[in-house]
Length: 139
Ligand code: CMP
Image (cartoon, rainbow, N blue to C red; front, top):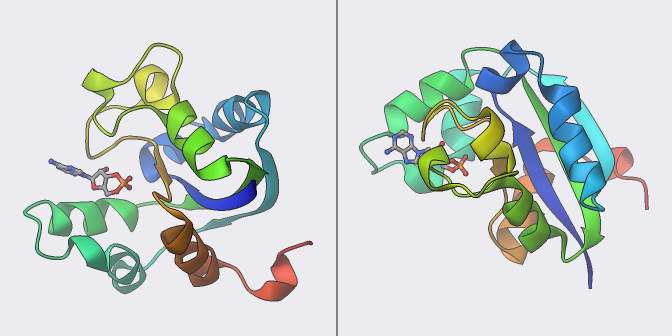
């Protein structure tokens, strides 16, 4: 089925000017960027987005990192977009990521891992709504 998923190009990647190279990976995999904006999250916004991880030991570090510099938030659309995006991203920890994936090629560490992608249809819906209004989403 055609799906939409929420993607974030993280501060370690925007800082190194990797937005275009990462977008090329998505587009080469058949994912269409149907919405995109560059924003600088406040710590409160980053904390809310990652609230599901609030009891994890890395939560504070994660929130601080995500609010440290601008990110690019985007909606990717395509056949099985959620799973396809996760394939293109590679494993969370770049040490475990397959060759050719975004995290293998660009990520610096498990924390500074260049990209985020929704993990399931319900979270994709919530995460897209967190960043984009209906008016910003072209049908
Ligand atoms: P993401 O897909 O954005 O979802 C949660 C993030 O937490 C994850 O990517 C990692 O960047 C981060 N994360 C997971 N494990 C660790 C860890 N051990 N230390 C720091 N950050 C982590």
